[in-house]
Length: 440
Image 1 (cartoon, rainbow, N blue to C red):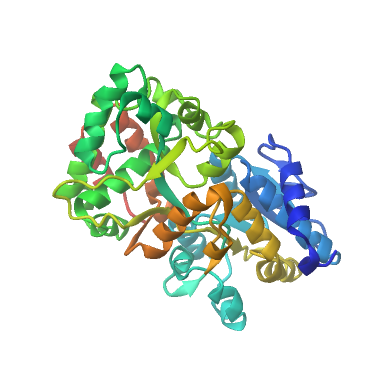
Image 2: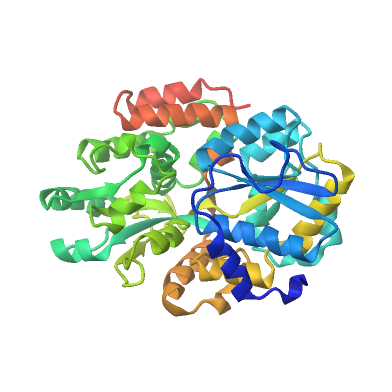
């Protein structure tokens, strides 16, 4: 089937047909982790609908148009993938195409010579580069060279809320931190958890600190941390942010038992759309899953969203975006030249095709394509425009910390964040612990 003739209807039918429960190492034709047959390249992707179906449809469409250069996809759950891909790359069993969040993880691959430099390839294919948001290349660029292809969607972190529960208690979404804290007893007194949180996953807790550090002290606070400056975690704005999140924990701001809730099963999202929690700080990608799994919650207009509140007296710019500027695909340096040729063709003609873009837009996402807002229509359009404006109007962007840092420091950070949210360490102890972690 010709790639250009692949219809949006066919693409969406493939997406919807993908099984919901594909788990770690659910393979679509590979002979083992990272391995591909002759005449075939491999790619590892994440599970979770609707993204999983769209990724599978993209691969299926590419394979239909390229019978002599097939791509075999394997899907992993989010948390399992982080360990498996690191192990596979280190054991010279990487897939041809490595799905990555960019930033520190990609820097680690580059430092060890495990991925190819794509700078010259982008120079030879200028249309591939100009099509994408310019901001999407920051996390793909290491020391001035591009090592991954930005793809899929922009995913800022968004404060979602249940409009029906706010109407029930007669409240408005918070615009400041003080207003947010004032809402906590209002919802608790009504028997409603103020915030849903999948604390077992830890990176979900991290999103709170990303905003609090930025709103309190501006992007230079985390920039200093990422650069490995001495005692950067002890910046007064960092201590203030750490203190604020513990204030919220002590005030019972999060749902009871939040530390035993994992994000992979979308249980945190269910608390919001089932009316058991009033608000949730989460990635924009959850709009699609709540739309798919939440019954009439999204279609009936009960889901609301607002920017993260400002902090009174804080130095941060409320327009600053936080989250993932895109997803990224890197090319394994261990792959054969035949596999690399297939992968580069997928980068050029298999990603962000018209059918691919329409599929992402139909799911409620915002693909990283300049001018894609002209495609927004129907009930998803208001949320998509909010995300598009957040991504294109942000004066600065804070990349997700666990992706911006190298894997070792990122793991230590998540361990300490878990202790911070359980109140077993103080903000000062958190800073001391993190200052002692080597940055490289």
